[in-house]
Image (cartoon, rainbow, N blue to C red):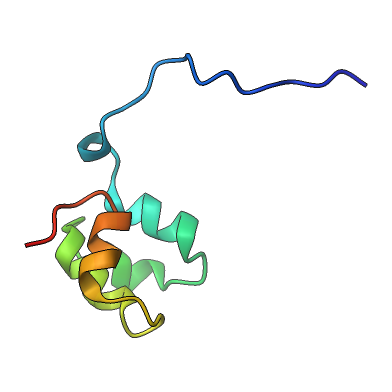
Length: 70
């Protein structure tokens, strides 16, 4: 079997180009997709939905989603 290594030299996207809804589903896969769609992709609104499910503060969730916390 051949092994592959991640070199990290490929093209990357800036964090603001990644949809916060996709990041949220990757981190918290059991989120309600309909509720997530109603957030409009705004990191603060997505974080408000997520903060009921985790002990992380809202600011930490926004940063995980690629947004800027105040």
